[in-house]
Image (cartoon, rainbow, N blue to C red; front, side, top):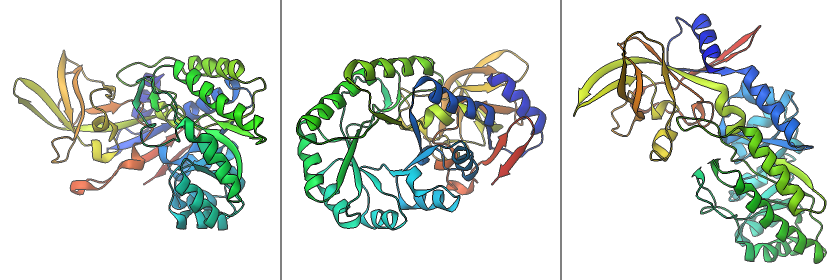
Length: 381
């Protein structure tokens, strides 16, 4: 499928200035419908932080997606494109009180929390608001980007925090967790759902009726290291819900990477070559500061898959970005056809945390973004 899409990119954008990010609308819709089909009755709340391009958000709005926001700026952007407040949840466990007040004033009524301090802020800035508790869940070491160390209430504090929220006039309505981004072991959801079910059942016994469980994100996509099929993770999630809940509650899910990650390709051009300390290097005009930042965040466990169409024997390359930062390296020890300056290189599955993280460091512009489908195309700078 990637090769078919690259052929389409070459046909439509043979002379387009690089770097640019090309989105496959068909793949995006396919991913969205997969969640709807395989997770029965699930409500999708797309996390805006994963990729906040306005055209992408508009597509998801038209497909009736909900949205998870981490700041007032993200909420404001959603409202400006016509997303209704009831389709937005404020999911950051730690928020500024000013952002809470702005969201509450705009009609957003559902907020995450995971600490006593957050309860007090929410009680002041969103009095009577609906809240859901994010809990910390077991870490199997399977997530490339773990999250439970920074966020999530310890299980032994869960009930105290739920009741504190009620005492402060808030309305506890649910639980959430996150197994970690790019989680490669589907068993992680079994343990996480089990932990949530224990908290849920105790709350019910003590007279607190919760309404929904938010499964967060974490379902992976393939990079240089292949990931299992998304359907496998969804099967494990369904089994976990049926295994740990007598009656499956309303389910929310926040697919970010799994929705957009494999729906886009970053297109770059070779701008330099060198041989250094016995290793061949190629330098391209897209690097960690142009939207490929995850290459340096967990470089021992993560590497983009790089593809090039060129004649000649395979060579082992390090692929460097254009800036002066020594850490601006997209991939190491990848085998590609022998490349020359001016050749194009394709970084596959680059839709997540890419253009949204791009900067103008060293004077290099962020990539433009194009959305491709069979009959139409939209460009945005």
